[in-house]
Image: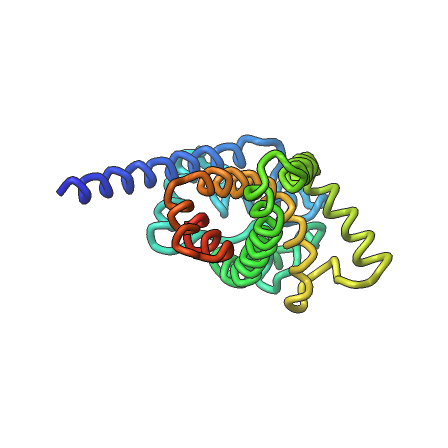
Length: 246
């Protein structure tokens, strides 16, 4: 019963946090300067048409009314329609201010379904790159505290954590794509297009993994069960991967 009540409380807390964050983001998007209808209809659209479209879309209703309408759609599995993406997939910004843009906007759920596989592929590849590099740097550092592998891990993680992601992305795109031509940098036509952004994300993830792995290995190697394993004749590789990394 304790476990069930604990899980129920955690789920309720998670649902409340998601609700509050959604309300906050929804409200901020409604109060910041800018008009999505103006973006849809084009900068030269007459004000009367802007107001007509906005009222038809319910964008002139109070924020709480709009939020309630949005949440009722979410409960039904309807996340609404994009303000800037038509059903064809191109941006509507700068389009004609005729009535053609209305009713042709893409469903948000459809857009998520189209891009989710590529997002998951990018995230998976970035995690793989980060873990491989962190293992190569962090394990030797943890096995040699205070020596040069430990110092290398410290300096590498310090440098990586200080690199702005947007700057690193530009530099790698110029070097690996423009200058060397090894990797594509724009668009998506296959697996190769995720390698460059995955490298950038891996650099962002690696410092925490390196320092965590270094500290964990260093602490584990001083535990009594490691000494017992050595007495039993276990190889260093087995001690590290079967016991220290557990």
